[in-house]
Amino acid sequence: MNDPETAGAGSLSRRTFLKGLGTSAVAAVAAQTTAVAAELEKVNAEKIVGPGPVPVTLNVNGRKLKLQLEPRVTLLDALRNYSSLTGAKEGCDRAACGACTVLLDDTPIYSCQKLAVEAQGREITTVEGLAKGDKLSKVQQAFIEKDALQCGYCTPGFLISVTALLKQNPHPTADEVKHACAGNLCRCGTHPHILQAVFEAAGVKATSKTEVIHV
Amino acid sequence: MKSFAYATALSTDSARQLVADHGAYLAGGNDLLGLLKDYLISGPNILVNVKSLPGLNQIERGDKSWTIGALVTVAELERDPDIAKVFPGLHEAAMEIASPQIRNVATVGGNLAQHSRCWYFRQRDVSCLKKGGNLCYAREGDNRYHSLFSGNDCISPVVSSLGTTLAALDATAIVLRDGKETRLSMAELYRKAWTEPTAHHSLNPGDLILRVEIPTARTASAYLQVSDKHTFDWALVSCAAAANIAGGKLNQPRVALGSISPVPHQVEAANAFLDGKTLDDDIVSQAADLILKDARPLAHNAYKVPMAHALVRRTLLKLKS
Image (cartoon, rainbow over all chains, first blue to last red; front, side, top):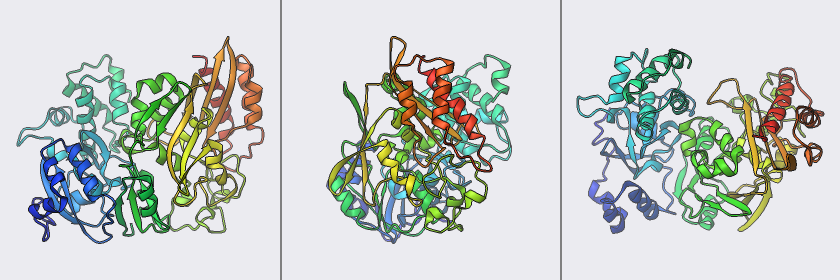
């Protein structure tokens, strides 16, 4: 496995990459990420790339990863197998289990069903990006305190979905938590503890015991 | 996945040119990447990202009709408070589609055009009728999720909940075909799937859904589905209904069912029967009888007949609220 900072950079430096984008895109780097994405689309638009490897730059957890990827490489594959970011898990690889969930500009998506080349210019957050240094996020800490995992394989996906939910809705009801986590499956059956952990992180008190048990 | 080239189109004309004869349009990608990973469709040699096409990610709110761009996501449909008021059935259908992660990227156009979920079709080693083979394995095999109606030997049902709901709302799809905008009713959008086993909609290669137009004439609408799982599951049967209700009487009622036919199942005789009627248990039951009278259940899907009957009754009665 390569270091994420340099993995797959090949012969393309940051400078030549930006130069390749044209000045308009360079100017937009300072602007919002969506604006950068729009610029990238414009500059690269209507140019056919691939099917061989093409330069792909991903913003993951606040860092830029410069990779050489075929257009068919999924974002999950790019993270796990080209960047050593193995936090997002491969379960089904068919958008059916949620283990690969990452944030794309604050929106949870399945990274297994998104091409890496499409995710350029967007802010990608994986489970590795939730903690600040050694300090776990509130949600991560609550998962530990409430014992909200067993084997742990689904946990990175749940953490991402819950983080996105609490950002939008800091005090969710049990039904809102269930709706937000419907795309994450846990075969160990830890859902009741996950719900408790979300309430803990949100500072919400369950209104009844059955609310927590009935999942 | 086989390898492919990639391009982003900025205009519908260039999208069509880039797709050429052997390309595929890429929007949400949920269905497309699933098909590619299991080698279920031949090619494509290029994926053309259409998400930057201008104007197609908007919802336009008119008096007589609303226009929803094909790139509007299912999550946007779900969250739009006006949709929940004006087309509650569409809001309810959007809420039930897949999972939050999928709704966040899935588009209206992609939902309408999605391919079969038949497990024989989805098994890469099976060359079934839908893939151009000579046998529908579901007919003699396990057909618990399959159709009660079909105009051909393939019994893979339509699974687009939006297609079913938009059929009840009498929506029109505006499709880019041969450089021109073509208007297709929901019945027309799926008609080919009724007669041709290899088709799952009536779109030709290179056709691109641009928008759907929904008349506001029907102020009441509802959607219900039953699934094995409570959330994140395909419908075993789904039902949408829409009408105008004036003085307690139905006006221009339409009912459509999903997952029981290769097309959104609509029976004009039932719509005509309901027109002018007041909703009660007896009337909705008679309508359900009309809708299901020609059902031809197979070895494992007969449960869908009473399920569909109950859903028609419940969905129609829901129009009252």
